[in-house]
Image 1: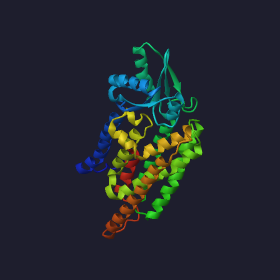
Image 2: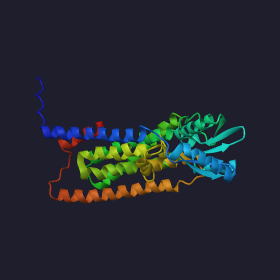
Image 3: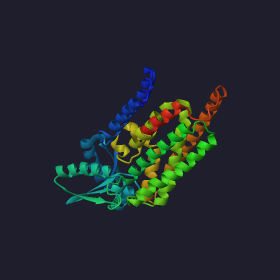
Image 4: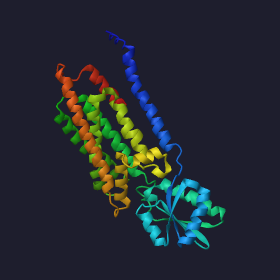
Length: 347
């Protein structure tokens, strides 16, 4: 016997399913092409080394050529310049010498940034027919992290696993008590983080301590899941759109994992100051390559987002309880909920 054909869905229902992935495509195009499409330096912090009078003269001459691409500072000794690069106060340091010039960079702080600095000052040295020597003060791990972006790829995997798990909990557990959904989120954060970090360790691509990165990953994943749990009662099927916008489109582009803020439009540089992905990425980078630097500010970003997520869940629970008070309780997910869950997982 042949199965009976499924009834045709109303046009309005089809449109409501189509609009979410269409909007996701628009957001991804805006964020990725806007944030990654045309990396160009603006106010790249660079120190010039030498006596103040001569170094300032060099800086003025270079500023006339480079404009606002580079923001110059001045130090008198190479040791001072090296410390500034090591502490991530500047992206590079230029040392003019009699028979050659030296450029101090740090590929661990961002290989694209180091390459941009090398390109800029390589052109400067070429115009003056001076040999340029490149010194990588804090190099990226050549074996585990040759591109300097392993931690960013870990962030991507962690984010996708966390927001997918969060949406599944929000949709499938929508009829359950809040404490049940929170318990699933807590366990999910621990398990997803452990799986992602273990895989990274298995491939030997973690440049720093796996336990320290795991310690950052759990609250990051929990925050992501709580956002999904809090948003779903408020905006329904648009939760996927909101989560992709917040944790993928804006998050990855502003994290500093691919391009530093000085190589991006000002909008993404501003987001880098407080967005959650930037907090995770920069804290993990400091733990791996700059252990003497504090990560208090980056932890503050993670904690701040976790607090916002908790507040969002609380607001959503209040709204959901008021809504349920006027409706008959549904102990099991409806067909529409199950369809939405399948749609969210696919997205």
